[in-house]
Length: 367
Image (tube, rainbow, N blue to C red; front, side, top):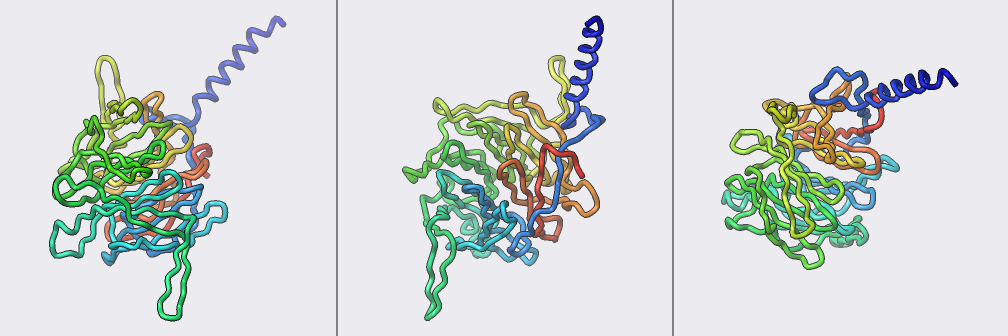
């Protein structure tokens, strides 16, 4: 019993050391253990592409649209089941092939809209505003002559995205909170910063009462954690945005500015999150953390960061490209999370387009 205080002290020291291991801070790259294990997932079944979209319904991910290395636009869609690791083609979007569209899921349906056509002679017609709902529970039967084909899922057109300037847009950003969709920013011939919410029950778009207080941008990202939407990154006139925002839809909706994605040193605060700033990045949410990886900032990126909304801090995890044979740096990839894993795939690096997919386990050290 006389040794109990000494033993307790040693145990406490061990606990503190153990607790310090894990994600490494952006400000402290010398942390012993960095978590996050990237492993190959099933290769995408469609043509390699970039600037596609994705959404998740009932633990099944849907990926479609995009552009390939020959500038061909797509309207096809594929379903990924992580339980079997299989990709299955589903009913294609019955609309103009496109890239740089947006997508979100709400109330058991997927929603896809806006984007860039790139084939019309009228430049304003290149910017799309149409929006479509995907229902995975209703199949589509198509008959051509004597040939009848049934494909998984069905699409129906819903209310078009608002066009305050008389044209559609592309490279906007989207997320959903409590079965309400949110779409904003993007490019319609000019950089934009407006935001709208979509109510699937009423099939209506409504401007956010408090707008969006951040900078104009395209190629940004958004993710949802515990009923709040986080919006940041992207580019505005070749400048990478460093402002980062949280939107709480409760009580009419309020925006709160979070720490800048920059190197800040003041008498009250000091941090360096400048490495997080980028455009056309990928993001996903696991547990109570948001993850941001790949994208570009002068060059394609491979680094990965975890955002803790409780602490308003960013922490480095193992990068997307960690060892030889790992995922190549890229931008304009798709990403999503299912269960305790994140997934990143497709995308572009220069003229290359990818069809590989990678799974991220935030709780494991890189193997």
